[in-house]
Image: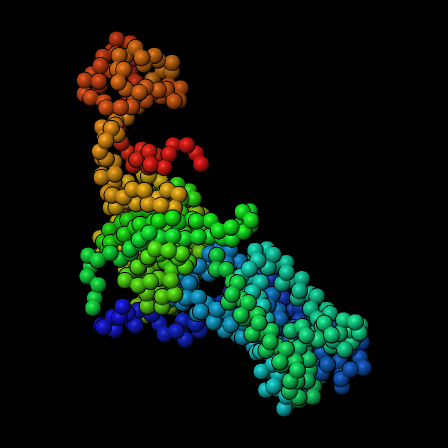
Length: 255
Length: 319
């Protein structure tokens, strides 16, 4: 039924305004949460410092910090998009927040878009903090590779957001908390995100290389060390984004 | 074309809803709603009454467009609510049973955030004052009492100046003060012309608030009418009266000589007489008290209540 007076259009703010407001609100909520802040900022910084003062990455790349920083930035994307956003969404689902917000003009699509904006906003802060600390350790990225690195990071964030939503929308929040934290630790350690898959035992390499963590780590290292566009890694990330997104749309339960 | 005001704001016809697959039942689907009929009008409070598990919340979720339906028809303000756009959602306010508020948020900032979605929201300050939210404006929502959360959820539902308001169990967990605030506000909003749809399993609430009541049982509408109509049904139950009085325990009511009334002492010292009680019966009972030199500590006479109607329809046994 149409409304000829046209008044109904004026009842809500424009969709982009609603989404941006929701994104800002969610980003502030994430940053106000102590555990999320530890996961998003302090753990990646600790990993960066550890890799810069220990010889774990010696023999690869031009310096420890040049080798470590791209992987730490990839780790930031995984922290925020997968673990942080997954846990927050899981609990929002438990408390009926998703149902309530989908009855407001924001709607389901606006809610998901708002989460995407929040992830990007928090990621921007993480990138700034990590880059500044890395600079103190003498980080010298391949400057021409920075646009490619940013595209890789956004694609990686999209893939991990889709996967985080998939877990949050299908499992109980306690299970989501356990699974996303456990996967974060496992992927950070042996998922090829900080330590390249090539350094892992031969038998693991083919499996690790197709993980989104390894693909994002490789894409970031190619961009920021060699100023190169790593096509296979980007294709793997794209595949995870599409498959994870489709699975989330198919199986996500709102209540 | 505009919708005339006497047209229903919500119509549900023969609503069928299956849920599942249920793991405990070999992955079979359960029919949660098997034919719910419900109509609500602007400027009135329509209650959906039913026992726990009768399908009240599922009916509301289908009406709000939160769930797809498996059969029948749902029209909310003339539209199919499932998959409807922001335009329809902006005209409808929803208070969910569990509140749906993020526990880590603070009440007033949250209300301000929700207000950003609407072009002309109700002023947050006005709602805060009206619903007494000021005293806990900046506490974490997880620290609020049930009544405080309920009032906050009501404010959140009203921010967008809705034409239709859904309230799922609005009096759950309310202390007497909160209850008064919420009930007064519901009556005021009804007078402003909102179509208010609420669920409850408390007969008292339905009797106090509702202009029109639908009773559902096991996923079906089994009765409808105004409270007066429902409690004045024809048939042998029509002149049912209930007289209760409190006195010393162990009295032999059979000695009163009122064989057409069902008498009982369900609680020691608390007596009930049920049936077509006449003024002559009352005189007989009072005369008996006089002969016994007995002064009851309390006497109460009631007609058939909504609770009686409800129990007659949905069975008195516990399911």
